[in-house]
Image (cartoon, rainbow, N blue to C red; front, side, top):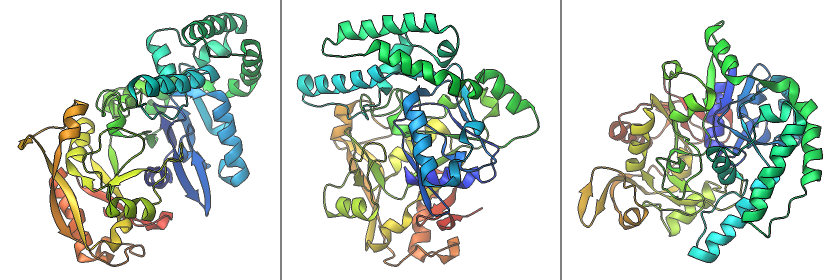
Length: 417
């Protein structure tokens, strides 16, 4: 969302390369450059910097119409995307999301609704089905599309038939889709590289600043998230190595981006959720709406159990605390510091959904600051209670806060060190 977009935007100012390593166009980031608002789903948002090379790694799943539409749409908004096709590199090992994957996503959600009375709340962008096909070894990759098109067509037809037999209501215009796919070949060719070789050269050539942008959030990770209400890829730090083809020793700083309160879009457990005036206030003041789905985000107090859990997995070297200004009007602010289940404090984040739903969050109450922070440009500019709030988070999680976001513009990101 816009919080992460802003941090990436800030770091991309002096990056040479900005990469995406997982997910597809299910993610959504808003970036404001020269007062033009750009929306990114598949493209690394650092691409608005003309000096940046954007790289889409092998772990990303690519819906080709989505990629080109996104570029066209942003091109019409402002000059931030000029020459984007000259600055975008795509790994030839990335899997392709077809229109039928998106259709299947919709059908599966409908079936979940009918059978279990609830769906997963997916973005219907075909992400689950394409990662399933990848794991089942029936997927098709960018390298296949650019090789022998006849062979590609044959494999495409087999895959389409498989889905048609599983989902009888599914309609696929096989020949029409193949015509469209063939049209992308010429546009794509100049952008596609062997990603492993490309990353190796980038890491071993003249020193480069390489920024990797995570999509989705730690709690949506296929392994560590609130399963099954998760996405189908690893959005934690491990996804960087597997999704770009680079060794762990090349991972340097790991920055966690966290709002000053908690939000969740779609369904799934949310222990610190506030289904009350507080939640509504955060939602409206924070303009909390999913960039991809347009759904209202659910809101609640900052949950440090969650943040510590994300830190255990990712090993953050610093945090960016965003949207602190949204809390400006609150007389007091609660922070979740522990979980109790059946009146016992538990030292970990529960894996099981049913247990997670029974969690009682233990809160610490901190004084609010009831004043406008949006004009603050240094830590010292913040009211004392706001400074204490930040220090409280640092002390509890054991990670320094390096940035504090207090507004929309690039200037409203305070850097602490």
